[in-house]
Length: 214
Image (cartoon, rainbow, N blue to C red; front, side):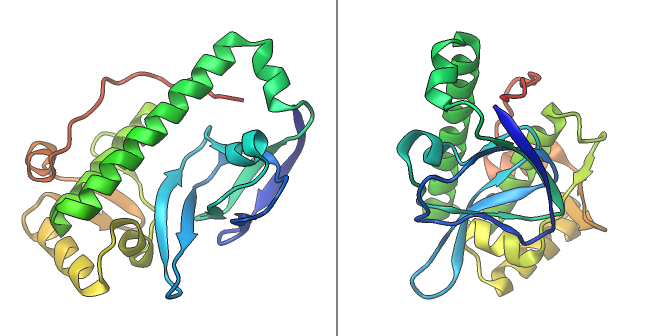
């Protein structure tokens, strides 16, 4: 299916909500995020996209997309337009199953994030996001002990957790002061995973190595 390989800068709009007939991509290197623009001009980050994950599945299956995707860091993507996705899935049941499993995992993250936004306190929202990202990166062998890359700026964290900058800064200070977790030089350091998981209500999934989808 691959027809091109693109190198993109940070803050590049790869997908825009409402576009019709967009391409299907896999993120080869770097980070991106899915988001929706809000009527008042802000944005809600829906999910973070990590290496090996698909971008543009809605366009490939439904013909249009309702969210936007922007690169968080410099990134490279594989462009998949050589074969229609439905045709490819008909002849490859393993790929169809992997794609379905990935989509169910994405839905699970969305369900949890909705519950956090609606019912949980700032520390729970931030702590859960930290541990969830750490474990996703660990599955990709991109974490090291208690540390992992964390290129999100404070505005990204606020947009992902629905917090004002005041509440966000206060929560990050508490996490650091209570020696639960800290962010230094674009790295996340988990200082006390057990306590952070207890306070945020996070439960880790069994460590399995995901297959690259495409």
